[in-house]
Amino acid sequence: MADLDPEMCNCFLDEAKGLLESAEQCFLDIEKAHDNPATFDQILRVAHNIKGSAGAVGFDDLSKFTHRLESVLLRLKNGNCVVQKKIISLLLQCSDFLKSSIAGLRANLSANVRNEELTQQLEAILVCNICKNERLTPGTALGTGPCGFIHQSGANEIPLATEAISTAAQTARPSINKKPVASADDSIRVGLGRIDKLMNNVGELVILQTGLSQTRRLLQSSTQLAIVNQMDKIIREIQEITMSLRMVPLAQTFQKMNRIVRDTSQALSKEVELEISGEDIELDKNVLEQLSDPLVHLLRNAVDHGLETPDERRAKGKPSTGRVSLTAQHSGGRVVIEIKDDGKGLDPQKLMAKAIEKGILRSEDKLTDEQAYQLIFAPGFSTKEQVTNTSGRGIGMDVVKTNVTALQGDVGIETELGKGTTFRISLPLTLAIVEGMVVKFGSERYVLPIVQVSETIQIEQSQITFVGETGQILRLRDENIPICSLGQILGLGRGSSRPWESVGIIVHDSAKTAHCILADQIIGQQQVVIKQLGDEIHWLNGVMGAAILGDGEAVLILDIQDLLQSRGQRTQKLPTSLTRQQTNPLKEAV
Image (cartoon, rainbow, N blue to C red; front, side, top):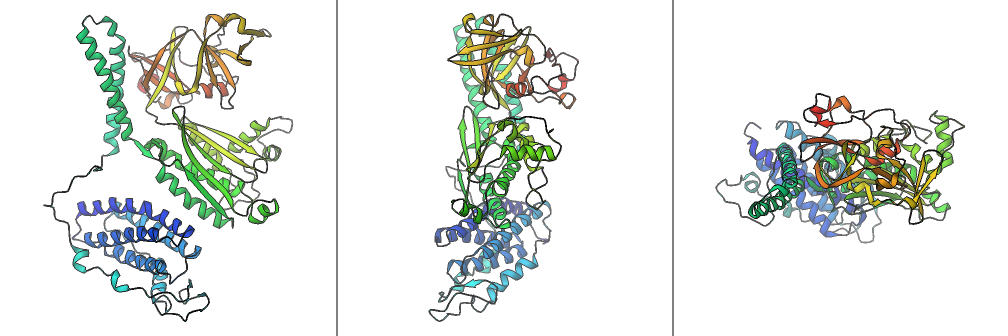
C-alpha cells in the first residue's frame, strides 16, 4: 500500500464509480431476462475492468474480491446456477459493497475494503461440487447444491482457464509518454465550484447585457447598434452553453429507482413491474440531487400503500403483478415527472377519518376530495396502523412536499378509487435563471415567471361582473374567472374598482383553477438571474428570490401559485422596494 500512486488511484476510482453505476442495472436486467448473453457480457466487462485496474494501481483486496464475483458471473452465464432472486440479491449486495469501497478509498487510500461475509458466500459457489463443473447426469432434476443455490442439470463445463489474466497484464502501469488519441466524445472533469463561479459571472453579464440593450435607442451610429445586437446574440449563446454545463440526464437517477422498487416489493411480498421512460431528459444538477429523495418516497409509497397484495388483486380481477410507471416529459418550459400505479387509489373519506383521528382535522371540518388528497402531505400523517421499515412514520410524503417546494416546483395528485393514483411533479429546468415577465403595480416592479402565465388580456368593461361589494368576475370564453389585483395577493390591500383600466394576467393555481391578476402595466419579457434571499427574510411566502434589472434596481420574483394558495391567510407585508443601495436585510441577499 505504501507504493500507491495517488493520481493513478484517483483516476481508477473515478472510472470504477462510473462503471458501477451501470452494473446495478445489469443485475436487475439479468433477473428479468437471464437468457440475454449481451447483459452478462456487459457486466463481465465491468467486473473484468475493475479487477484488472484495481490490481494495477495496488488495490489487491478489491481486485481479489472482484475476481471472485467475476467467476460467479461466469457460472451464471454458462448455466451452472439458475438465476434466482436469492442470487441476484447476493450480486446486488456485492455491488453495494463495491460502491461503498470506492467511496471509502476516495476518502482514504488505505481504507479496509474487505467483506468476509460476502467473500464466503461467493467462495461457497466457487468450491461447490456442482458449481465446479461436474457434469450432471442428463435428466437430473433441479436441486439445491452444497452452496445453497439451485443448479441446472446437465450444465456445460466452464473453461476456467479463459478467466485468467497474466500477472504482468494486471500489474502493468500505463505509459505516461503515450499520447492519447482524440475522439469526438472526449470529455474533461471540471470542479462544480468552477462551474458555479462561471454561472455567477455569466449571470452578471446577462444583467449588463440587459441594461445595454435598454439603452440601444440612444445609439447614434449604425455600427454601434450592430455591435450591440451581435453582443446580445453571443451573450445569449454563452448563457445557454454555461447553463448546459450543469444539466445532467435523469437516466442515472431513474435507474436507481429500479433497485428501490425491487427491494420494497420483496420486503412486502408483492409482485411489481416498473416501467421507466423519459430518462434522457436533462435537469440542473442541483435540482436532480434534491429530487432523489422525493422519488424514493413516492415509489415506496406506490408499492406499499398504492398496490394491493397479489391475492387482493386477483380477487378484484386484476393481474397479480402490479404496475408502477416513472415517466418524465417537457411541458411549458418545465419538466413534469409522473409516478403512477394501478392500485387501490386514494379514499378521501378514509383520509379525512384518519386526519380527524390524528388531530389534524376537526370532525366538523368539511373538505373537498381534492383537499382531502392533500392531507397525505401533512407532517405525521399516515394511514398505516403499524410502523414498519418501509412506512408508517408519516414523514415520507411531508419530505416530498417540502423538497419539491424548495425546488420551486409543485406536486399534483390524480386518483380514482380502485384504479390507481398518479403523482405529478412539475419542476423548473434550472434554479439559476428564469424567463420572466416584468410588470408594474403602483410604483413598484415585479417579475412573474413566464411558465406560470397562461395569457395576458386587455379587459373590456362588458366582460366584468360585480359580485357583492368587492367581488369581481371576468367572463372569458364562457368561463367565469375571479379577479384580484397584484396588490391584494401581495397583502398590500389595494384592489381596483375599474379593472378594465388594468392589464389582466391569466394564471392557474395548483388546482388548475384560472385567476385573473390585475397589474398596472406589463413592461416586457426577459431572462433574469435569480438571486436567493437571505436567511433574515426566509419567512416571505410566494417569493422565489430577487432579480437585478438592467437599470440596477432589484425586484422580487413572485411565485404566483404559492401566493394564490396562501391568499386570505397572509398577514405579512412584503417590502415595498428593493435596491442595491438600501440598508435593509435584502441588501445582502441581492
